[in-house]
View 1 (cartoon, rainbow, N blue to C red):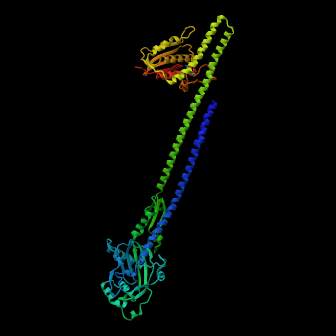
View 2: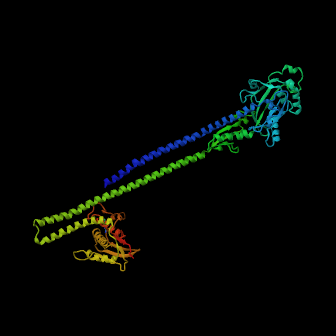
Length: 602
Ligand code: ADP
């Protein structure tokens, strides 16, 4: 038995070592790898946000450069109500400035031009609602801008301020265009230029034009004002021929040429449309661009990872340091969604792991049970072989001894018949054993069919056989319930069941003061056949097992009674053949009740 126990243990250890352990190790390795990946991704979040912020700023700068480049190409003479169409000859064809007639200039609210002493001219493109209101707005913004000290420290583009104007090559501007641009811009002015045309033909003036400078500030009305401005001034002298006689349309030039012109940015475009438009192409679905919630203190922003300061990052010059922080945008990352994803993946892994462990656990239990069953079977076979050997040895040696004595003539004639009787009895014992083994395999095949029969009648038929020989006093009493319904049974089965149970009772619970009881009764819809004794009873844990083949309580060594462990198994097999159930329970005031419950046939 000890060897069998260790076999069970060994097979379980093997199962654990080959299946459970590798699964646990791989599971643990995979889990720690998964956690490392999550950590790496978590750390990459701020880096990615910073990277994306740089990308957004770079693309905004690119778009701004494009806008400035396009605006730089605009001749400064276009900053006037009337411009001259590009025609040769003596005719002047004055046209309204393209600044007013153009329809698509995203990012620009309007243009302006002024000289230090003159008026501010503003231009607003066509087709926008409230055009005059916008013109007035721009007018007031530029008036305000004009009063401010120029910011000359640095500039967007190549050079800075006036110096950049000197770096840029001087432009030769036709005097005809210049005269029209500097004039009042009315019909009178156009006529004046027309009259002067013969003198102005083919004459030009060298003019310097600086790069655009970007300036930003918040004015006293809290309006954000973003302006690109450049300077225009005379770099050459007027043709000496011209100076000999007065040319009325060039009168404005007499005071010199010093203009400041440029355009006012559309704040909606600069601070909203542009960054959001770019963000759409740069940010992924977990990132979001937002204006900081002003009401919230900075530490409650939570998942902020990178900031963009439009004014500072696009290199606008400011008058006040705090203006440099204007247009702050934040890239926030929805790390909740990331954490959710982490939780989801972890959960998926854990549930798969749990399923796997459950499967392994079930496998282990099944393996344990199957090994146990096999071991029990082997154990019973071992017991059976021991029992059969023992059972065979005694009758065979008795038969041999008696037969040899008879053969050698050692037995008196008077005793000879007793010896022959003994030989026959032992032979019967042997054949019973063999019969039982054969009966077991026959019953297993289940060939007999039950019939509806009277149980009492079958039990009464056995009465004579159950009364022991000897003094003829019976140790069995019969209590048969009259009018018992018919039950499904076989005569052979009832005979075998009763004789086996009585035989067992005599063996394991020999009747002393009280006889054994063979009882039939009707209970709970079943026809019961019971054998009651006053023996030691059967422990609860053994009540199922004793009906199994070759099972005997205790070990073969400790058992004093002879037997094969087949008796009760045959009882169960016979009961099953009839569709009945065999069981055992404690008898009141000591002993056991062995019961077979038959199905009623009516
Ligand atoms: P066997 O009698 O050949 O050992 P059985 O199958 O008839 O085999 O009995 C199985 C076991 O049940 C016996 O070994 C015995 O320990 C127990 N047993 C059977 N009948 C009784 C009884 N009336 N009282 C107590 N134990 C019993």
